[in-house]
Length: 271
Image (tube, rainbow, N blue to C red):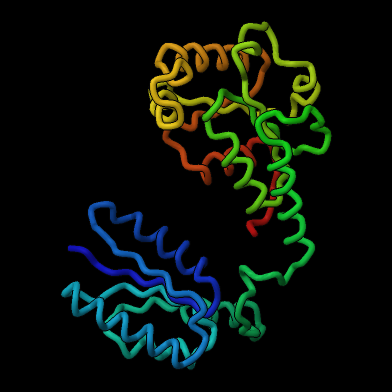
């Protein structure tokens, strides 16, 4: 059964989608058609969303799931008239929280993903620029780095750096280990002096070959022999230097980043 799922908000809908997706992953045997509807901030837009929900119910033959984070209760309540199972996150949690905290909430759109905290936003933008300008070993000036990822090419260093920067404001740099590096008994000196910031990424050489084959089909760079040599040599070098290593073979960028931040003791607020 293919069931439609709506993530609806008067803001970006990121919160609704993140929360809803986390719940949907607990039902791997089911198929879902996911629709995100951001900026539903008026009765007219809510009526349009309602029509889409009802149409999906008719087409699917089953009522859709609706994850709703609309702050305005009058606008959000319009969705309750439809043929969907509405899960109102603010309606569910705000009332109990008001009682627990002994304070009334101040409903306002865009608090979670807007620019309410300008300093925090600027920190994330600065960290993102840092990750871009310190990618793939383009510079050896790493004094300002909070994390330095080390590993062979295509092991996941760049996306992990960008994720940590954009979501947590962490200044992350990365360095790709080349054949020249792997033939030496130790890491380059400019990395060794930042050993406490270093974290190694590795990957199954079969998986690495498949990734590289997409980038450079039929090349030595993508061959199993080359990938195996690089991965085994990099792991041996990092172990010899006492650098922690994490395999990215079956891990998402979110998992990789979270593990690194925990192990390096970098506690940061999301967004």
